[in-house]
Length: 171
Image 1 (tube, rainbow, N blue to C red):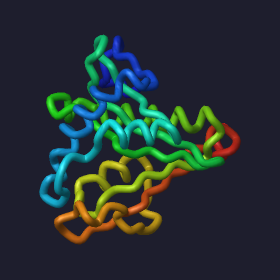
Image 2: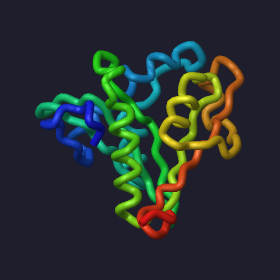
Image 3: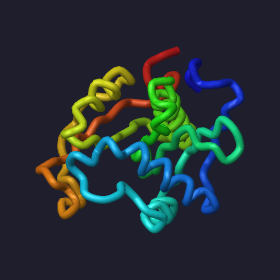
Image 4: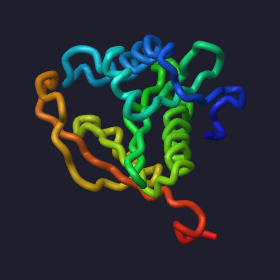
């Protein structure tokens, strides 16, 4: 975990019992996207569907209090993270970095050698954040829910090698 995160903070996989709290956290964190998205970022049905193909890692500084979360999924040797969300009152404390590193570690421990994330091109503050973590732009994809977008937008795909030890050329 990031050295700035409290030592007592628990990082765990979310369960179905956490879905309602996750919806609140993610929608609060994604309020920043209201300038181009109509409606909430997610709902319970969406999260449960995601949990069928991956999992949410939750940072819980005290029982039932979520500081942040990130969705992770695995496809062969490729890991994916998305919906990285930090509670608005806890932003700027290194939690986003902690969650990104935790997502990478999670996927690496399951055999992944590459990590991918998609960021909306209109969120211009995000690519520099991920570049600082070693990600590089690798292309573009269409925004999947254009009916909710109030402005033209697309995803910027960013990738990073997450190989360990000899596989990455390190000893």
